[in-house]
Amino acid sequence: MPPLSRQRTPESLYSEWSHSYLGATISIHALAKPLMKFMYHRAVLDLIKQQQGIPLSGETIRIYECYLMSKYVAETTKALILRELEYRARVEVEAQLVADFLVLYDILLDSPGVMVRSWTCWALGQLALHSSTRAAVVAVQPGAALVALLSDANVNIVRGACFAVSHICRDLGGAVPIVAAGALEFLKQLLQSQDTDVRWHACWALGQLAYHSPTQAAVVAVQPGAQLVALLSDRNIKVVKGACYALSHISRELEGAKAAVEAGALEIIQQLLKSQDTEVRRWTAWFFAEVASHSLTRQGVVTVQPCAQLVALLGDGDVDVVTGACCALYQVCREVDGARAAVEAGVLKTVKQLLESHNEGVRTHACSALGRLASHSSTRAAVVAVQPGAHLITLLSDANVNVIRGACYAVSHISRDRDGATTIVEARGPEFLNQLLESHDKDIRRH
Image 1 (cartoon, rainbow, N blue to C red):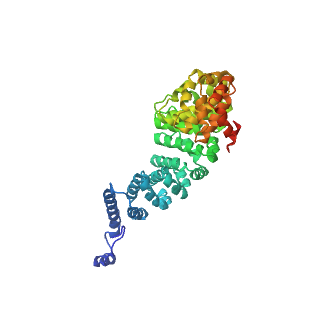
Image 2: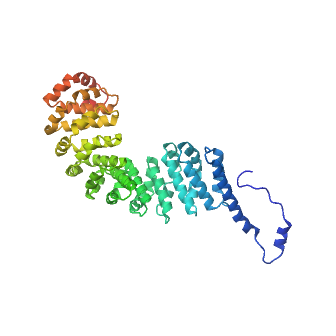
Image 3: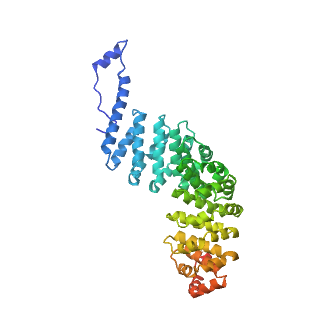
């Protein structure tokens, strides 16, 4: 028998009698509805139990959809189904089947059932977490409905809505409608929530929105810097990670970087460079890189003297931490005082070793850092002394164009020193450089 269907009920003599006589009679329909809801709930429980350990099928999804669409199914039963769908959506292969329920999202988000709205949010978030199903979520445009739930009275709903928004915003097509729906002011307020998960997801949502150039300025405009800096001292490491992530992206805008510096971020983040958590170290390194990329805030970075910690991170076991530290040192070394501090902290030997890294991003930033150090007359001799010339010439034929750019940049500045120029010539630098004059890349030709 198909779900939610039954055979036609035969006419009953008792039904005729009950309608013919007035008095204390029992409404059979009043008894039937609760009984139906109970039976459907038991049927759903049995179905979920039967499906444990079995890959999700299209047929099972269609059965769940029938229950979700029926007005005779209790809200608790629908919440049970949505919880199962959210759980299934954690696996990317099954998430593609779960995405079929998206046609019902607007009805479910408007449900009177608290847990139905909550689990719908979580299911949407799980689908948006996977790149293969994120576009399907963005296509149904749930942004406005989710933003409305950010101010719901129930913390479970707010938590789920925050989670969904943070992942939908990973796609620019999802980020723009969410900003247009007025999410930013709500997210800024939620940074002060008493709920740890709400603060965490609000941080990540702001960070994702600041990651996209078209929505970055809007994030900076609501001035979340002070609240995010306060969360750098949060007792929960997840919140600290989220705040670091958001600040690293907001600081790509000059106004965002200035706000973070004015709120006292530099001293706190310098301490976080020593964190035991890999993600915290990664995003704090990138934060320094972004703040130091602006001439108006670079001196503030140099003043807190982060070079020793950044140099230590060049030996980190996580390649993203190393890349961030390299980039930060490159930016800090644009100031003479920063370059001197980096040399005193022992940056040169470590960076020379990184020229042989298997990671192209690390090689690129290592080249750039050496070039920046060699651009200052006061630190150029120290760069030449570690003899990076042969390594740099090898990188002129690297498979990655960014590495070649960085190597050209470093060679051009090292060659300003007589001894540096000699080592470049001895390593057959002119032969490679002569070929690169015909490169299609203007930066390579320029250097």
